[in-house]
Amino acid sequence: MSFTLAIVGRPNVGKSTLFNRLVGRRLALVDDQPGVTRDLREGDARLGHLRFTVIDTAGLEEATDESLQGRMRALTERAVSMADVCLFLIDARAGLTPSDKVFAEILRRSGKMVIVAANKAEGRAGEAGYLDAYSLGLGDVIPLSAEHGEGMDDLRMILSPVAEQF
Ligand code: GDP
Ligand code: MG
Image (cartoon, rainbow, N blue to C red; front, top):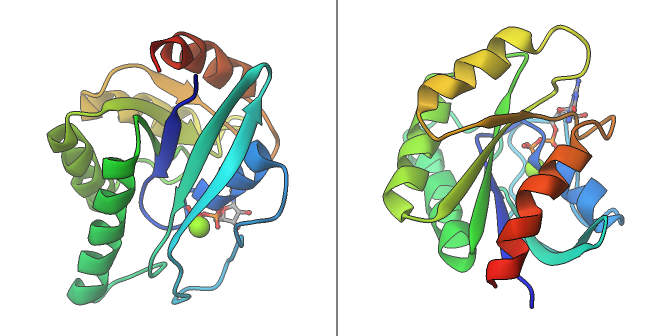
């Protein structure tokens, strides 16, 4: 039994960093540079005893032009349609942005199971953004630090019962 998890969210929230941590190999590029074209990446994830397929959604990072945003959205919708569960990442340091709300709407309309996580939550800088994420109305928010590996046990505990459904 296995399931597919899509990591979804606007550019730069840490999706690829989390993907790399789950897959354990550098399959997804982590990039500070804006404007790099990417696609969807799939990998075999391990999280404690759990094994699942993970999809890293990318696109045109830091897209500002509307057509680029459209492409980002199309890629996200494709990833969501392939997934059993979506992990919606926001940036705990940046707080919620209008773009996050667009992604929240895509997820809400998909009818898929959604787990919200506030990444970059290490230290104290993430506290406000973490609480902000509750206003999305998508349920509980897990504080994560993909870069430092914090919150991975909480993620595993939330995914464990999910894994049994598939
Ligand atoms: P993506 O565009 O959503 O795939 O984001 P990336 O994984 O490429 O990460 C964007 C930036 O955020 C990079 O500079 C990462 O090093 C940084 N980043 C990712 N995870 C964390 C984290 O947990 N804490 C902090 N402080 N930075 C992070
Ligand atoms: Mg990425």
